[in-house]
Length: 224
Image (tube, rainbow, N blue to C red):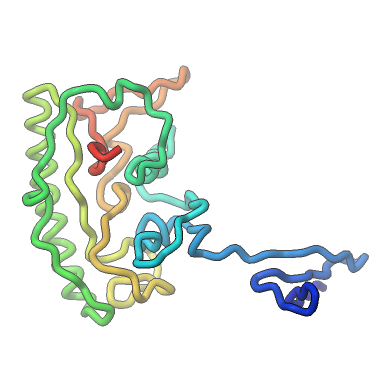
């Protein structure tokens, strides 16, 4: 059996620090609980964007948790999430040198609608799907223009009015995130089949061309 007790130093309790006794020999060790505001998981950082809340401290780390629509040869979703937040720093110079096409901010999304904490999920899903149809039309047009002009596509801003999760949700929010803001900027893997936009990795570590024949960049590419 094991037991944990709050740790006190010089008579003062130290928050989030515990003295733990475990094992048959009763050895003691110290266990600290890291604050979520500084050590964010994948959902609080990439979906809830908790670090952008007013007064939020700067994160010290972010955990690259599971992603959706991953490829068999590479974790495209994880790389793309890091790119979207300016945290992927190993792309070659060629990635940032080329000719590009993108949609204006005005036409990238439908008019933004704020979804309160008590929004009816049916209303949120309805607008979420309307936004998805609009996004599909915009990206299809960009890919066609990029193909015709030999340009890479900078993906438009992508908004989600409902979280993407396989478990129960209320008001289009997953349990534990009841106050998260809707809409939010979607990670690419929430709304697109990420691997189809990138080529498979070869044994020598290079990335091949995609079936689309048009390269894509993250929505915030021009800010990186």
